[in-house]
Image 1 (cartoon, helix red, strand yellow):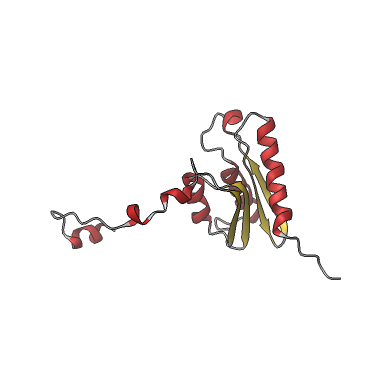
Image 2 (cartoon, one colour; image 1 turned 90 degrees about the horizontal axis):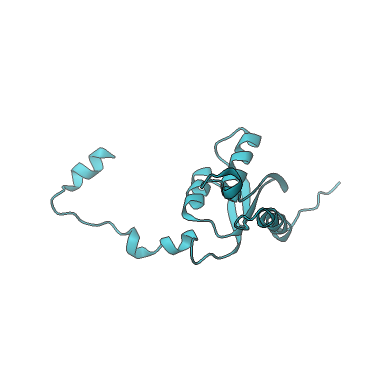
Length: 139
């Protein structure tokens, strides 16, 4: 029996359903789902106000749940669908989790991480009084 492969639109709709849950709780309406082998294994929506926790973003909650489900600290066989572009904190968590792919529904020019990935702030700055070897020795 052939298994029907679900389309990305299906998973984004599920992330949007999670965002609706957040909106209904007077949270910033962001939702996320983690998908493994075409199945949703974790869901999350913003719960910052409910939990009184600035880190209770949809992505963080979904990632934590997915790691508990898989028993792994890496989600390299999983895809993340999130309704809004992740903030810098969530983007860091996404990178550390090693997702296979990340899809977000809308850009966030105010809080989204992409605005911070400009070449200007990614250049090595030369500090004359510090020798190159002393910097790399610490690392």
